[in-house]
Length: 154
Image (cartoon, rainbow, N blue to C red):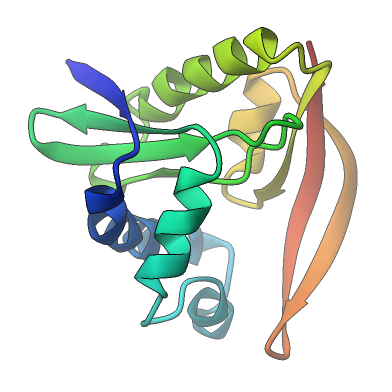
């Protein structure tokens, strides 16, 4: 049974580890090693990560003492981070976390939730009722990554 709670600054290191693992072990089906390295580099600034997570509601899902995934939502309805541990893929963690996002978006009176979904995440968001606005290519450090601007009207 998963438990959900809000971010605390002491969570940052564990979240960064999950973030890197999720990208390098799950998104590797759709992106090259070079693309993965610019998306989730070896070193991520923990202070900047903490500030980012403190600037918006960020929820963490735990299975006992193990972080299974996390999600956030900016005040304008932008879902920026949704990552699930490779050890907890396809068991409902993302759906469990997404429920918190939609509940918060409705409390915020957001008219929509929007996201830039990776090739790996696109099917999840389609199942949750999101529509693709456009495919886009983002360039980082000379690497081009495809993602999808998607939204769901509330």
